[in-house]
Amino acid sequence: MKPLVSLIVIYALSQCAPTLHAQLFVDQSYKIKSFKDVQYATAIGFNGRTDTLRMNIVVPTNDNTTRRPLVVWIHGGGFIQGSRADFQTLAESWARRGYTAVTISYRLGIHGGLFDPPFAFDEAELIRACFRGIQDIRTGLRFLAKNAAQHGIDTSRIVIGGASAGSIVALHASYIDPLDKLPAAIGKISAVTRANGTFARPDMGSYEGTQHTEVPTPSVDVVLNIFGALLDLSYLDNAPFIPLFSYHQTDDPVVACGVNRPYHRVPLVSGNYPLLSGTCAIVQELAKRTIPAASYETNIYQGAAHEVHDPVGVDKAAAVFAAKYVATPTGVTEDVSTTVNADTRWTLYTLHGVTVASDVTSDEVRMLPDGVYAARAGSNRTMVLVQAGTVYKAR
Image (cartoon, rainbow, N blue to C red; front, side):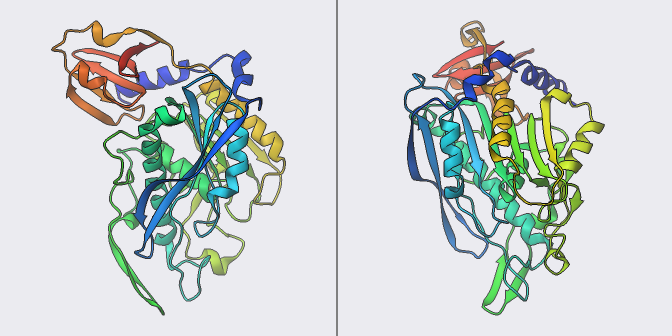
């Protein structure tokens, strides 16, 4: 691990708030207001048509703050169905806890084989659907960063969660980084021929997406995984580990808790789906690594359903876990940009180690979106918080 990345890991772990503050973002005590059908992007769908992507944003109305943690919830549906409306009630409950809460839509659809979905044409279809979701969620995060002041968002405190396909997207959108080897299936591959026509499968480009790229994608601070999975456990490599809360049933018939194909109990359907590593496999992998046990919490339930056996209890546990990381705003000291020579050039990185600004002045650093960055000025390395045009040193 690079020295800069090590610094980021140490910082991230140091930001855990004391337990006594946890109730601040656990109890549902605020009144709320919803902004529905907010368009955040357009994108080309699996069938070549343009999709309009929207989100619902829910905010507290009586919390007396303009800078709240953000939680983004991603619905499930096997990449072929589901709606952000499915998680509207969940978003409202998290807004009542003091979050700016979002339930977000992403591109759906896969090409079927002889039969329509859930039958898949080949393994590439789910992989490409997942990466469309990653692009959309990361685009949505940039949209929210651009509009942080309007919706009272502190972009240095972000939680992302989902269920089933939504959790698969959340995990990948959070853990994939530039050093990871991406699947060949997201490049240009052979077309799909069906009774209603032939459909090209072009190179999908960057997992970042192409819209709102004038601002960097904010870093995620907590991932909430509800019976999700990873295509490749190596995506946990390279970038700092993001604290992870997970729930899964041991014999889930749709997304296996271990390593298996989606719908693994229905071989006729599952045959053209790729292998996924569910929560049980992820936890086993984390146990092999030097990941502090306090930075992940796993609820494995002895059951055989693709659902949460205790929705209220699991939701409360997820809220308690997330609150440890977002309950206290980032600590700061002096305005760093006033303590360095005006000619000093800065290089800044996201908490994933992605460069967002190179060889820039202090005045140019001030113009970055609010958030926490790893920074290098000359030979000095530090963590900084950009907030309302001021650059602070993070404690």
